[in-house]
Image 1 (cartoon, one colour):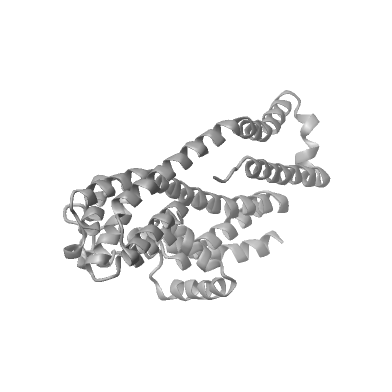
Image 2 (cartoon, rainbow, N blue to C red; image 1 turned 120 degrees about the vertical axis):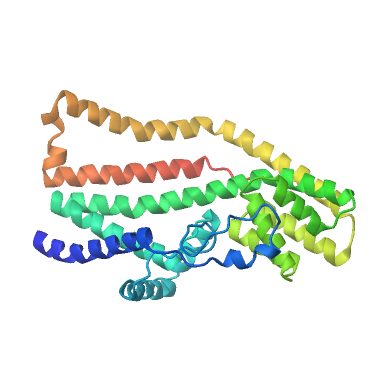
Length: 329
C-alpha cells in the first residue's frame, strides 16, 4: 500500500514543485495597469514595472508550462461545474490576492494530496488522513480570515470616507472629485478601491456601476447602503452631502453596538478558547509525566480512532461556540 501511495504521490509532488519553480523563476509579463496609468489617480498609482520586474497589479500566473496549464484547465473545468471555482474567485477578490482562482485551486489540491501521502509514508493511514485534513482546512481558514479582515477594515473606514466625501461635496466639488480626494487621503483598503472606481469612471464606466462592483467584491453590506443612497440621489436629486452624513451617523451607531455586543460576549469567546486549549494542555502534561498512560491513544487502532475523533469533535465544538457568540448587528 505504501509503495502504491508513493507511486501516486510522486507525480503530484513533481507537479507541485514544478509550479512553485515556475512561479519563482518565470519572467513576469507586462501588467495591464501600466496601460491604465494615464487614467488613474495621479501620484498614487501602483509602481510601474518592467517586463522582467515584479509588481502587485493584475493576476499572477502560478504556472506557465503547457502541461501544467492543461492540468489547471482540467481542474478549473471540474471546479467550475461544481461551483467551487466561483467560491475561490470570490474569496480571492475579497482578500485582494492577485492569484488566478484555477491555479490557486490546483496548487491547493496538489499540496493536500502530497501532504496526505507523506503522512501515510512517514506514519500510518490515520496520520496521513490527519495531515490531509490539516493541509486541506488551513488554507481555506487562512483565506477566509484574510478576506473577512479586509472587509472588516473596509467597513471600519466607511464613516471617515463618508464624512470626508460630504465635506468635499459641501465645498463645491463633484462626487468624482470627492472620491479622488478620498482615494488620496485614506489608506488601504478603501483608498485602493476608490482609486479603482476613479480610474474606471475616467474610462467612461458609470460611477454607480463601478461602486456596485466594489460592494460585490468587498462584500460589505454597509457599503451597499452607500451605493444605493448615491444611486437614488443621482436619479431623484437632493442634498447628497446631508444624506451621506446621515448614513455615516447610522454606521457609527452600528459600530458602537457591535463593540458593546463584543464586550458582552467576551466571556463566551474566552470559554471557547479555554475549552479548546485545556484538553491539549492536559494531554501534553499526562504524556510528559506518564507516557505509558496515554500511549494506547497513539499506538493502538481503537485509541487512534478515539484520539482523532476527539480532535474532530473539539473543532466542531469550537466553531459551534463561536457561532453562538457571533451576533449580527
